[in-house]
Length: 120
View: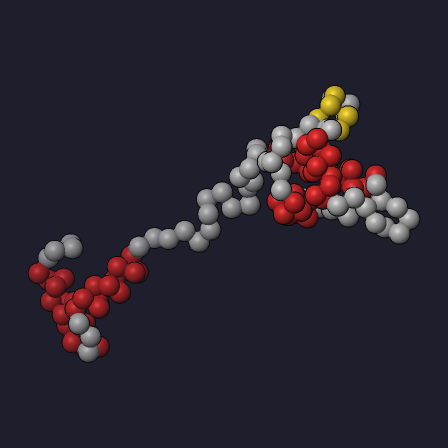
């Protein structure tokens, strides 16, 4: 138990053995017993949108980049593809898909394009 006299004597004995103060031993014990997260609970999941929505937008951006590729292999930038998707939208079989303004960022989209292997 935390406040037992037996624990206090053991801590004092350890402190004397290593030549440190009892408070140093208590501090070391506190560091050992505190749990800490190795990664965030939402690691690998998008925080901006639901995964299905972000995946849909990333597929459309990847398709835009693929359709604008020329013979030299140059294609539309991710930033410009996001602007087109936000400003004008993309016509699909399900109708016009337009992303909300300011939600998608270049770095987020590029990260998920490479993570989901949608990049060229």
